[in-house]
Image (spheres, one colour):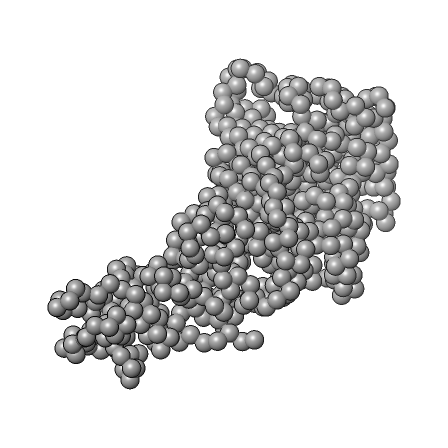
Amino acid sequence: MARNARAEQLREYGRSVLEGARSEQVLRMARQVNSVSYTSAREYAGRSLFELLQNGYDAHPRDRRDGRVHVLLDEAEGEWGTLYVANGGTPFTWRNVERICELAQSSKEVGEGIGNKGVGFRSILLISEAPEIYSADPDSPLGPELDGYCFRFAQKVDVEEFLAGENNAHEVAATYPPLQAPLPLDDVPATCRQLAARGYVTIVRLPLLSEAARAEVRLRMGELAEAKVPVMLFLDRLAGLTLERRAVDGEAGELDDRHETLERHELTRSEERFAVAQDATGHGFPVSCATVDLGPSGTFLVVQGTVEKERLNSTLAEAVGAGLLDDTWQEWKRSAVVEVALPLPAPRRPRRGQIYTFLPMGEDQAAPFPGHVNAPFFTKFDRTGLPSDNPLNVLLFDAVAEICLAAAAVLRTVPEPSMRQQAVDLVSWESEKGSAGRLRAAALRVHGSELADVPLVPVLAADGAVPETSWAPPRGAVLWSDLDLTVLTAHRAHEAGIVVADPEIGGDRLKRLAALCKALACPWEPGPEMLAEYVERIVAGLPLPRPGEPPQAVERAVRGPGRAFRGRRARPARQAAAARGRPHTAAHQPSPRQGGYGHKHAYPGQAERSECPP
C-alpha cells in the first residue's frame, strides 16, 4: 500500500471516530473514556519511559536477539524539549493503529510480550499532550524511509474544528478523550529521518508539555542508566539500549554534529547458551542455561524453564472462573516462560534480588532468594507490584521454585568451584512466607523425594572427587563453626569422617541455607552430646606429645564443652592418649569452666541437633 493510501486510511478512520461525537450516547461513553484515560496515566506516574521501552521491546519478533531501542531527549527542540523513542523490529501495522486508539485493547498476544493491557501508552499523557508516531512501511520495512503509518492524535482544537457549526462544539471538545482519533502526518521531522537512517522502523515523538515534564524525563532516563538492578537482564530480544540527552547549537531538530551531547549511555546485552546435563534434574524437568553479558552492568547466569500448557490452562481457567482474571487470559497460546538469574561471579555476600515482568517491578518486590526472577505475572495496574495470592502468580512462583531446584541440580554436576555458590544461592530461599513448603512441593515434582533428602548442602570431599560427591542432604550434614579455630577445624572434622559443610562457600551463604533447613526441621548445628562425640573423633586423630612431654598443647586445643563431656568414659585428651596406648595424667584434664577449641567460644554449634521428620 502506498503512503498516500495509508494516509487516507488514517484520515477516514479518524473521521469515523470523530463522527461519533455527534451522538449523545457515544458522547456519554467518550466522557467516561476521557476520565479513565487520565486516571490510567496517573496510575502509571513515573513509569512512562518504562512503558515506551516496553512497547519498543515488544515490537521485535520473539526470535530476535539483535534488537535496539534509542531514547533521545532533545532539550532545545520545542518550548520544553522533545522526547524521541525509536525501535527496530516490526513497523506499525493497521491493527496496531486500531489498538493504540482503543482504551484497554492491545494487539499483543497474552504472555508473549511485556504488556497486553493496552493502557500503558496513556502514561505519556503526563508528559506530552501531542504524541506523534512515525513508522516504516510494514510491507517493506528494510528501507530507510518512514513511509508507513505516520500520524498524530486529534486534540481539542481538531474536535472543535470538526464539529464547527454545532452548538456544543466547544463543550464536546473540552471533554473528548485523548489518543482516540488518528490523523495523518505528511512531513517527517529531521530527527526522525536521521533515526530511520540508523535502522529504526518506528519513532514515537513527544513534544514535552512543561518544565516538570522535562525534569521527569531527565529523572527517569537517569534511573534507567544507573538502575540498582539491571534493566536489560531479561530483555532477550534487545542487543542495545541507547539513552541520550542533547542540547542544540544549531537548528533545532537536526541530529548532526551541531548537537552537543550532554549525556549518553549505552546499555548492551549479549547471550551465550551452554549445554547442561538434563538428567541431573531428576524427573526430566528441563532447563536451559546461558551466560548474559550486560557490559558494565555485569554478567549473569540465566536459567530458563517453562510451565507446560496443560498446567497453565488449568490455573487460568480457575482464575477466570473465580473472576480474578478476565477472559482474555485464556487466549494464552504458548507455555509460560519462567527465568531466574544470578550474578557471575557470585558476590562474597549474597544480595537481595528483584522480581521482574521482563522489566524490574517496584523496589519492594524482592525475590525470595539472592537472585532475580522473571515471569509473566499478573500485576498491579502499573506493573510495580503483584497480588501474591492470585492463582496465576501462585503457579508461577511454584514454577520458580522448581526451576531453582532443577538448576541447582545441574550446577552440582559442574566441576567449576564458582558454581557451588550459585547452586547454594538458588535453594537458599527466605525461610518465612511459606518458602519451605513451596520448596518441599517443588522437590517432589523435580526430584520425586522430600527436600530434606535432596543434596542441597555443599560439603568437604576428597581432592579429585567427582562434583556430585561433594554434596549431602540436610539430614546428613553438619554446619561447623565459622569461627577462627586453630585445631578443631572443619577440615579436621572432615578428616575424622564427619560430613561437614564446606566453609569456602562462605558463612553468610551457609547461614542462609541453615535457616531454610531449620524451617524444614533439619537443623545442622550439632547439640552438645553430638558435638562431644565429634570432638573425641577429631582428637583421636591429633598428633600426641613425644614420650615424657606433658600434653598441654592437646589440652589447650580441646578445652571445651565441659558439661557435654561430663559423665563420658574419657575426657578428650585422655581419649586421644588411650587411642595411641600412652598414659595420660589427670592433672592435665580440661576444666569445664575454661574455653576450648583454642578459641574464646566453646564449640561450633550451641543448638541441639534433631532428626528431620520423615
